[in-house]
Structure formats: C-alpha cells, structure tokens
Length: 87
Image (tube, rainbow, N blue to C red):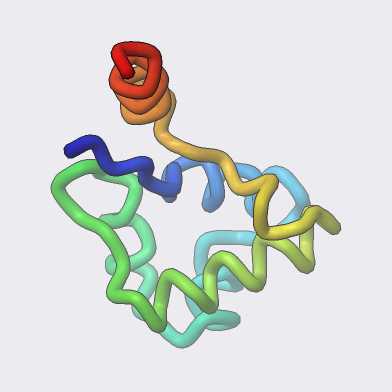
C-alpha cells in the first residue's frame, strides 16, 4: 500500500525562505534545532505526530495557505497515481 507523505524538507525550507531561521522554527514548535534538521532527511526521520502538527500549523500560518496545500512527497504521489490508475 502506498502512503502519501508530507514533504517535511520543503515545509521547513519554505518557512525559512519566508524569513524564519531554523532556530526560530524549532523554538516556535518546541523542538531542538537538531531535531528539526533531522526531519529533512526523509524517509529516515519524520516528526512525531504532535510535532508534525505544530510544524504544519506554523507552515499554514506563515505561508497563508490551507492545510490541503501542504507539499507532499512527489515519489509517493506518483506511486499513488499509478496504483489508482490500475483499478
């Protein structure tokens, strides 16, 4: 079964490009800087649910976009599309 996953790397980069430092992002969601940087190493590291939710909320606020506009992992999206087209 294919999972569609949030692109944590892109989320953190987009927030940074909006003027936040890694330290500011980490402080805003209550995690260590090293933890936040680790999430960029997808698929090896992902946030715990509560941490991910706080990062998603921050992204929505900073980017002024709805949750359904979150960047998703393209490889997983392509796999999901291929799987759905075989039905």
